Image (tube, rainbow, N blue to C red; front, side, top):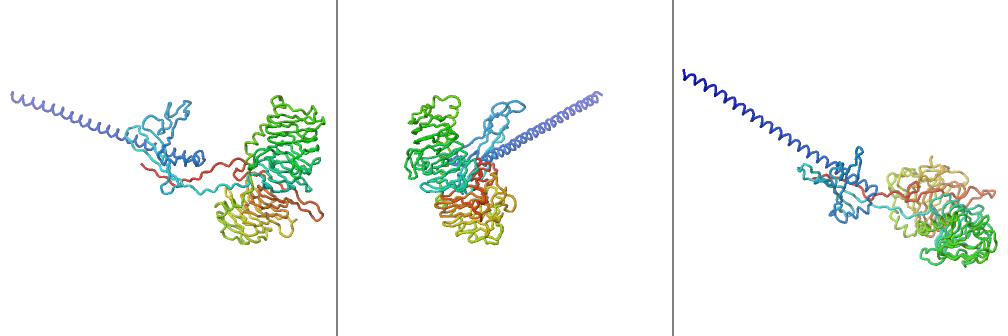
Amino acid sequence: MKFLHNGKLHQRNSRRGGMLILVLMIFAVSLILISSAMTITLASRNRYYVDAERSQERLTLSCAAETVIDALMTQEITDDQLELMATTNGTSQYKITGANASRLGGVQASSTKGTTIAPGLAGVTGANDTYFTVRKDPSNADDIIMEFSTIIDLTSSDKKAENLRVYLHKKPVTPDPKLCANMATFGEEGSSISIPRLHITATKSYSVFHGNVDIINASGESHVHNTMIFTGKTRPAQGTLFYNDVIFYGPNASIDLSSAGTGNGIQTTGGIYFLGTDFMGNSGTQEVFRTGAGVPAAAPGNQVVSAAGGAYFYKANMTVNGDTLQNGSQGAPYWVVGSGSTVKNNNTSDNSSTKYINDGGTYNNAGGNSSRNGVAAASLTGTDKTTYDSIKEKAAKYLAGDVKAAAEQQVPTTQYMKDTFGGHKNGTMISASQTSLPGGKDYKMSGSYGGGKTLEINLADGDTYIYMPADVTLNDYVIKVSNASDNRLYILLAEGVTLHIGNGSNPYDWKPNSGIISCDSRTGSGDSSKAVTGSQKPACVIAGFGGNLLHVPTQCSVLEAYVSLAGNSTIWYQTGGNRFYGRLEAKNFVFNFKLDNSGSIQGNHLEMADCPGMDEDSAGGEKPLTPHYEVTGYEYYY
């Protein structure tokens, strides 16, 4: 019995040990399963963090590259700066930082202060960085490769940088030719030209006349509303009015006294500035008045000059014997005698309210009238001081600013035109029967075109060139552009070539399809009765290589173009009824007018409205910079 009892006890103990072992085994398996689950979770989380880092790297990299490329396209980073970066050939790193403060929920944050708002940008603590390098493309030295790199490693598990290679191709550069910088540029040093019946209603830019200028009264006056610059001897005429400042620029500029008489002078509602500054290699002191033979002389007392905005002298000599420039019903309310100038006043009458201001020059009241004594600029007060300051400030701007560039703008040379446009002589000849042509190509024209046809050239595909190797006549014929955008039609006249724009046999018939139309704002099929107001630039340039004649001898034609004729060329324009919009540049010009059968003048003056320069936008401001590089490819890599 005792044996049996002990056997039962042993069996009970064995069962208890088995249960313990089973529990331990279950616990061990549970630990293994839990550990495995935790390991898998940690690994998955780590992979997730690494993937997130890599995704953020790609996003940061792409955004940084896009920002830099956009800055290049808008020229915030200029082509010159890009090319300077490339000279280090990829050895210099340009870091992209996030140090500019932003506000999130009203709390200031940046990469270096507060919440990190730009992971991966330089300045973030740890191995986080974004930078780019610039180098020349080894396969083409004109092209450039930009390489961007970003690394974000917050887990210490992502040591690789995300990289992006951007390929930039340098486009062929076609800079704006330096033509028609002024509204009007005529004459050259030593030449003689006339101004008949000219109306410049433009108030912007400048009108510049070089050489000896004869302002003639051809049964109708000339009126000029923008700033006028003369660089040679000018002979005034009665009835010619200026509505802005008139500048005699350089030591050779002067007023010709050979037509002096009441009303025969410079009359302006602006100021008049005698600036004897060095000009085109000429230095010395300007003599304000000269005889017809060019000898310095004293002005008689017959209102040779009237300037409501006052007169300023710099390196200029002037002597007056009468009431010239002195304030009565006409004259100038202020004379400011500036540096290097000597002004002698022989007038003895006492009806002047003019202020004579010594401002570094010499004013001599030779007439002895006490009312004409000069005062020092430093003693001026009130209105006198304010007016003097305004005149002096404008004179300083004219001496140092864009007036210098405007005055130095000359008619281009034949060589310049050949160098600029000589590669476009071998185009396809345009037949008289064609009515449309694609743009972006070179063409030729020669002979007569007419029949009331319109030739439309689509500029959507790029700049278009028409070379005229021989004389061309357009009678009852229009050349019209479409889809111009920033592209242009260039009409190129070979040396000695005449471009004739007329209306056929009857000059008095209105022919709306006669001439060159290059503005979309002139509506209809070439309706030249629709005036352009200056809201759009002409999309046509007429460039003459030298010895050219642009001949518009009949009424009712339209011309929308920048016209620049090199060398000894002439613009001959019939003012009766024609429509013009653009800018003009030539040595010689004739603004004629047409008499009808009864001898009466047909039409009005040649009107020149505000027109932006070729390098300006349509509003007349400076044209935005455009890049010479374009993106041709992207390549991501580790």
